[in-house]
Image (cartoon, rainbow, N blue to C red; front, side, top):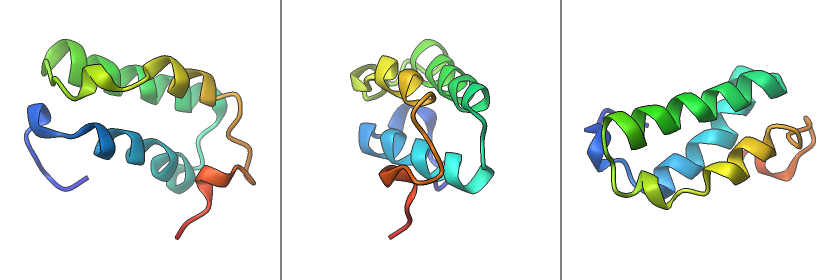
Length: 77
Protein backbone atom coordinates (compact mmCIF):
# COMPACT_ATOMS: atom_id res chain seq x y z
CA UNK A 1 0.00 0.00 0.00
CA UNK A 2 1.11 3.47 -0.66
CA UNK A 3 1.63 5.62 2.38
CA UNK A 4 -1.77 6.80 3.52
CA UNK A 5 -3.48 7.56 6.78
CA UNK A 6 -4.62 4.40 8.52
CA UNK A 7 -8.18 5.72 8.78
CA UNK A 8 -8.28 6.23 5.01
CA UNK A 9 -7.29 2.74 3.85
CA UNK A 10 -10.20 1.27 1.92
CA UNK A 11 -11.78 -2.16 2.27
CA UNK A 12 -10.53 -2.99 -1.24
CA UNK A 13 -6.96 -2.06 -0.34
CA UNK A 14 -7.10 -4.19 2.78
CA UNK A 15 -8.43 -7.30 1.04
CA UNK A 16 -6.02 -6.87 -1.89
CA UNK A 17 -3.11 -6.68 0.55
CA UNK A 18 -3.40 -10.17 2.05
CA UNK A 19 -2.89 -12.42 -1.00
CA UNK A 20 -0.17 -10.16 -2.39
CA UNK A 21 1.69 -9.99 0.93
CA UNK A 22 1.42 -13.74 1.51
CA UNK A 23 2.83 -14.39 -1.96
CA UNK A 24 5.66 -11.89 -1.67
CA UNK A 25 6.69 -12.92 1.84
CA UNK A 26 6.09 -16.66 1.35
CA UNK A 27 4.27 -16.86 4.67
CA UNK A 28 3.45 -20.05 6.51
CA UNK A 29 -0.15 -20.55 7.64
CA UNK A 30 0.51 -19.32 11.16
CA UNK A 31 2.41 -16.26 9.89
CA UNK A 32 -0.45 -15.36 7.57
CA UNK A 33 -3.00 -15.74 10.38
CA UNK A 34 -0.83 -13.57 12.63
CA UNK A 35 -0.56 -10.93 9.90
CA UNK A 36 -4.35 -10.81 9.56
CA UNK A 37 -4.69 -10.45 13.35
CA UNK A 38 -2.13 -7.64 13.42
CA UNK A 39 -3.73 -5.70 10.55
CA UNK A 40 -7.16 -6.09 12.14
CA UNK A 41 -5.87 -4.82 15.49
CA UNK A 42 -4.13 -1.90 13.83
CA UNK A 43 -6.94 -0.75 11.56
CA UNK A 44 -10.05 -1.64 13.59
CA UNK A 45 -9.01 -1.28 17.21
CA UNK A 46 -6.30 1.36 17.04
CA UNK A 47 -7.07 3.48 13.96
CA UNK A 48 -10.87 3.04 14.14
CA UNK A 49 -10.99 2.78 10.36
CA UNK A 50 -14.65 2.49 9.29
CA UNK A 51 -13.75 0.58 6.09
CA UNK A 52 -11.81 -2.00 8.10
CA UNK A 53 -14.95 -2.87 10.01
CA UNK A 54 -16.50 -4.08 6.74
CA UNK A 55 -13.70 -6.60 6.07
CA UNK A 56 -14.58 -10.25 6.66
CA UNK A 57 -11.72 -10.86 9.07
CA UNK A 58 -12.89 -14.40 9.89
CA UNK A 59 -12.66 -15.30 6.20
CA UNK A 60 -9.08 -14.08 6.00
CA UNK A 61 -8.10 -15.88 9.20
CA UNK A 62 -9.56 -19.15 7.89
CA UNK A 63 -7.92 -18.56 4.51
CA UNK A 64 -4.57 -19.08 6.19
CA UNK A 65 -5.22 -22.82 6.11
CA UNK A 66 -6.04 -22.76 2.42
CA UNK A 67 -3.26 -20.68 0.89
CA UNK A 68 -1.32 -23.39 -0.88
CA UNK A 69 1.33 -22.27 -3.35
CA UNK A 70 -1.07 -22.96 -6.22
CA UNK A 71 -4.00 -21.06 -4.63
CA UNK A 72 -5.72 -18.89 -7.26
CA UNK A 73 -5.47 -15.71 -5.18
CA UNK A 74 -1.70 -16.05 -5.06
CA UNK A 75 -1.17 -15.88 -8.82
CA UNK A 76 0.02 -12.50 -10.02
CA UNK A 77 -1.63 -10.52 -12.79
